[in-house]
Image 1 (cartoon, rainbow, N blue to C red):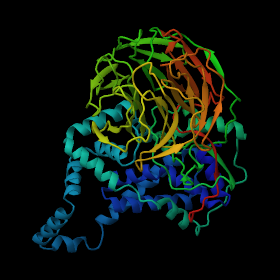
Image 2 (image 1 turned 90 degrees about the vertical axis):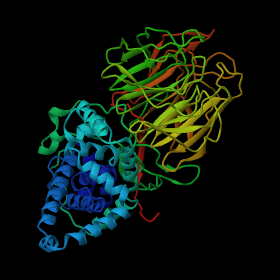
Image 3 (image 1 turned 45 degrees about the horizontal axis):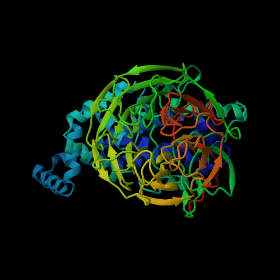
Image 4 (image 1 turned 30 degrees about the vertical axis):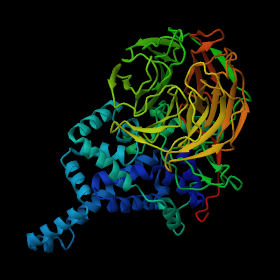
Length: 617
């Protein structure tokens, strides 16, 4: 079957060795974390990770089921780690070491401890944990994998992984968790790892692909390729058997957007490798945009020119200025207001597949003008207003239908916007009541907040979305007083969490506030809202972050402000809001940009083309 990995493997076996760098970039962190969980030595883990990819390239022609590439890497890694441990145990100098004066080695250990005290304390603490706890902690913190990805990788359920993570954290002191997170951040694979592998395999000759390899038509493989991305994380694939009976799992909406890869792209020199990604090409600053290693590789999908809107089942509770988030293909509409005066705590779940709504447990703190984001299947409701401006953070678990209080956000504010990159939530802007430029990062794993670089343009009632690990802060108003007196913004500013820097981008055509944005295939759709105090908009505008350009799309049937939008399976659901006359609505309208049915319900995907990879540029 011609899937994202299969297509790249086909390129490699037909002489394009540089294409293998895409696979290295995509899986290096997961393999590195797996190796470290077994060896508990960063240098050894990096050596093994390098050896894994070199061995995989050398033996690529032996892989019968190309769709099981990750499972094959898992098996290679496990075998190499076992061999490494066995060789280390049987090394010739082992007897010599055993015969030496123990005080001498106590002295060496003491010196090493003094130099690496923090690391040693961490190693000792982790050593006390059962192996399965230690493994999930390493995959989560070092590999940057979500609970769901780890579950797929290890062939178990998400609930099991979340239980292991929770129990493992409970066994470690909070200070040790902080130390672990910091230590793992310091020992990420160095920049240049992928390029080093690509340079090394240039000198390795491999057998070509067999001519009899069956291929699906190009278009059909694109439709199935994205679904297969998740399936490669299953341990059931370790048998390297065909995947026919395993198909059917969509990509999770809460999948983390991971760090950028290393491979630069020149979109003017196009190769035959095309895939779903975002952020490639040169931006206004001339800097290279790097690929996301979790992109699903497939041909570009052609959307309809303007998209299509369809009426769906009304939300039970008419409301606006609420927030909605997606977990496991279900949309959770939370809080808001029915009359622009008093907030509510109502939570209702929408199933797009069945077009049905279900009542859920109320949010503990009734509020409006707050923001929600999803990490590891949990929804975090942050900030807002209910008379006072809130610092409140409450976590909702859809699996148990329960709420939990978390650490307060440092800055009380409403009309903020939040987005997730690499498992961390970024609370951006908002008002108190004047517009703020404040950016604060929340780490759900440690339940801690950190101050980040201010947004250049202070504003409230903005909307943010993520494409390729970058956050785009769009529109807004000078105040959080709703409806505001203006002026209102068309401003677009890009935030890179990796560098903690902001960059100015092309303005949105329609200045507005209290609208909503959602991402489909790497394009950001800005929907609804209003400007000054004129009637609400039905306007839909699409932003392409690669080209840094905006395009007009089909208007939403119901003009409204204070709505919330969510993406499931390539379709955007515009829910609730305030209509003309400032009346709360329960209206739900579905927008199909032309990518529906592809299983794309995450941020950071769009059609793009790999250019020739040039390590020297």
